[in-house]
Length: 92
Image (cartoon, rainbow, N blue to C red; front, side):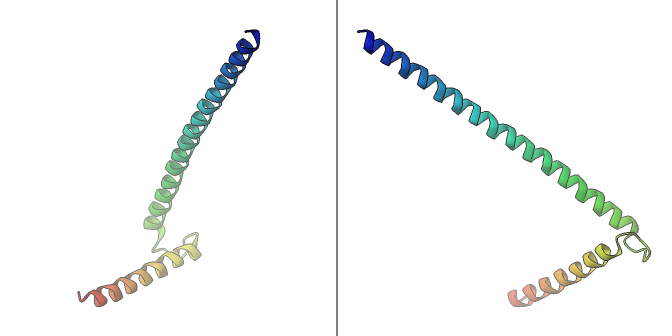
């Protein structure tokens, strides 16, 4: 009987280890998800700061970040032209 008891204890101990590891893995995934949420909040706020800055200084030719201001302006024009092509293809 002693052999079967040791086998049972070993199986029980290994099962607990596996359960603990699974619990840790779930907690790690949950924490990583929370980190991603925090990083997304940071990203969204950086974008909002940039949008507000652009709205405030976008028409100022001497504004900082002139290269980026010009890129935004050109990208908007390009997007408008592409949307017009889509509208024509749709018959609008």
